[in-house]
Image 1 (cartoon, rainbow, N blue to C red):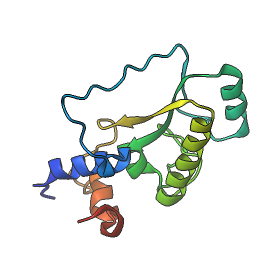
Image 2: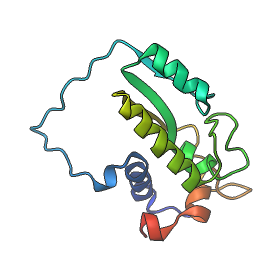
Image 3: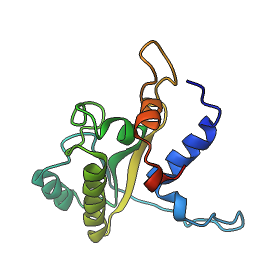
Length: 152
């Protein structure tokens, strides 16, 4: 498989996964306000049940790392391995899992908690070509890219 546009593909995937595709670029003169916090929680598993919310309400974090996006999401959410390591997605399917994260992120924000996602571009990027064809993100790009929602 020849990937002459791989840098464009990766930029598009990052933009879609992080929601930056519709955000205006920040002018270099603008400085983002400094974010400070004293309590942060990060979960890589077991964040799908009601016990998670009891924990969040008891701990009262200011910042939560919640969810896996990018290569993790697009390589695993729709597969049989969706609930296993590394992401432990609680539901299967790109739309289903995306909707689940949207709902849970909104719930965290209702609690006035800053939410950041886990976005790893190295672990699951995969191989553009090999004896069994592309793997990871490259397999998803070849077999799962939806031009209607993600563009050409």
